[in-house]
Amino acid sequence: MANYRVLIASRDTDDPHRPAAFALTKMAVYFPDGCPAPGQAGLPKLWNYRPHAVTVCPACITAWRADDFVSDPLRVPTAPHRPFGSPGPPQTPTTPGPTTPPTRTSEAAHHQNTG
Picture 1 (cartoon, one colour):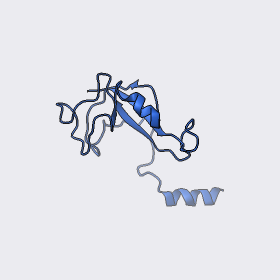
Picture 2 (picture 1 turned 135 degrees about the vertical axis):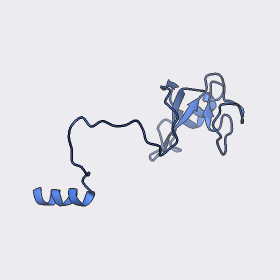
Picture 3 (picture 1 turned 135 degrees about the horizontal axis):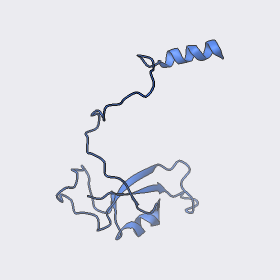
């Protein structure tokens, strides 16, 4: 599967040479060999997948850039696939720390007492 991504930001409607004031930046998968057809083997089951509408390829990047700022494709490392919420690799603390992390309440009290 593709290991490339592009960043996309909306253009300002009054000045298309700059990003919109509160433009949301999103990341899209870039397929150097073309956007795959829906249902292609190995493609994640996306609810509303439409080629060239949620993915980017050489055939459609110019159309994307007509409406949005689109970065050049960047290769990203392949990561192990883990479901959201699954624990990552075990963490080994490098320095001893408190057994329970401070809460926002205790942090605020600390700043009031020392500030």
